[in-house]
Image (cartoon, rainbow, N blue to C red):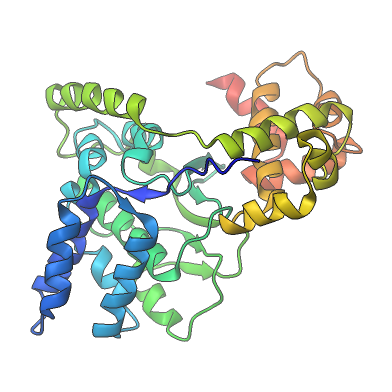
Length: 334
């Protein structure tokens, strides 16, 4: 199999976050300032360089709250064009739709998913591709800062945050900053907000600027290299073998005419689990089938390679937070 791996990159506008933090310090190592100046001029920054840069900052500023301090310095332009799209939307709900569509312009590590439950809106990031704890802390703090800025509600706080990482010794710093409870060792990274934030108006909305910037973003996203041929091959193989039963690694490898060792080496190099790819494919298919009321839950379970409907129901509830029948009813009302 040929290595056509998509490079994971981040927009250089995020370097501004580190510049703001560095400017607030009494000691500013010249090598860090010089490095920021160089990276700011790049078209895109490999995600590994971003992680390395954060590690260098931690070496110079070994604070337990470093990620939170960096993230709370966020201004809209630190998220590039995506930040302006969010800032000029009319409501938080509309801003989130644009965030979901244009997120690769900021980074293409993992897509952000939004899930609605009875009383909450959930921001979710899968753990299929590796990240670092410090990077996750920066983006978590930046997300809260952005939502508070665009709504003008400085008291806005999550209901719950779930993280893939072990509980840190400084967990009280998290709780004091985000003003919510935490769960660690989670299978996905999630931030739960009250559902009502969807309808909150954005104080900086500007329909004219939004229209101009959305046109620009659409053109950029069309040119953005979003596809990874290797993942396309694996996902297509999973789709094919689902028709005949559970998509195990052995069956997928037989379809691809490759060894399991080769498959797992490719996935390991990218920090990806085979089970996460299967789960992603099944979830997307399940949501598509559930919008068709003529297909029963039992039929969907069979199509997705589950032994029975109850196994599918448990899996879907784990993915989305709601049972498939409830998800279907909600979609029918929209």
